Amino acid sequence: MQLPILKNEYRPYCLKITANRNDNKLWQKEIKFFSGIKKNYTLFENRKTDYRIVVSNSASESEKWAAE
Image 1 (cartoon, rainbow, N blue to C red):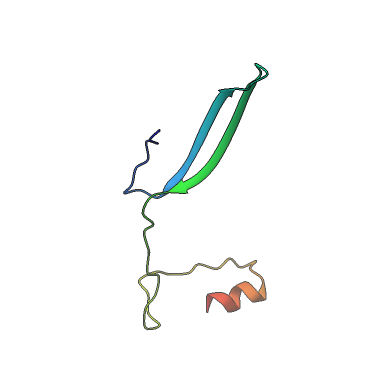
Image 2 (cartoon, rainbow, N blue to C red):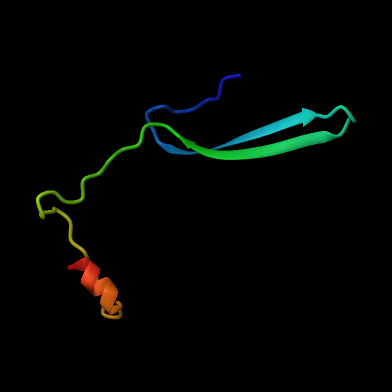
C-alpha cells in the first residue's frame, strides 16, 4: 500500500483504515501524523531581525521582558 503524501510540503495527514474482523465486525482506525520536508525559518541572526514584535498594552511583565 502506498500513501498519497506530498513530499515537498510538511503538513498533517490522517490515515483511515477499515477492515473486517474474524468475527465479521467492522474495525476502523484513524492515525493522524505529519509528513514531508520541514521548512526552517530564521527569525533572527547576529541579534538582528527583519521582523517586529508587537506587544499589547495589557501584556504581562514577563511577555514584555521576552519581547525585548
